[in-house]
Length: 88
Image 1 (spheres, rainbow, N blue to C red):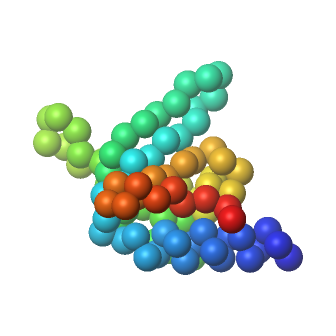
Image 2 (spheres, rainbow, N blue to C red):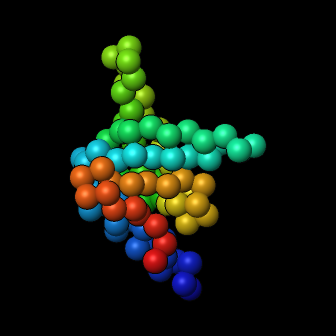
């Protein structure tokens, strides 16, 4: 049951950051990482959505699951207070 409580805590932490600027680091395999800043746009029961803007004024929305944070495939740092959302 600790995994379920960890997921609920991650979800609650992410819900508190909706609308804030974040830095997201996603592991793409084979020692490759995707690091970008975006805005945490919305949360849903099993996923959250991050909005990225690029240099060409195009908006891209990407969804990640809360288990991605639990398994450390995705790391989120809130830019405002430099707080990392992770499993406690």
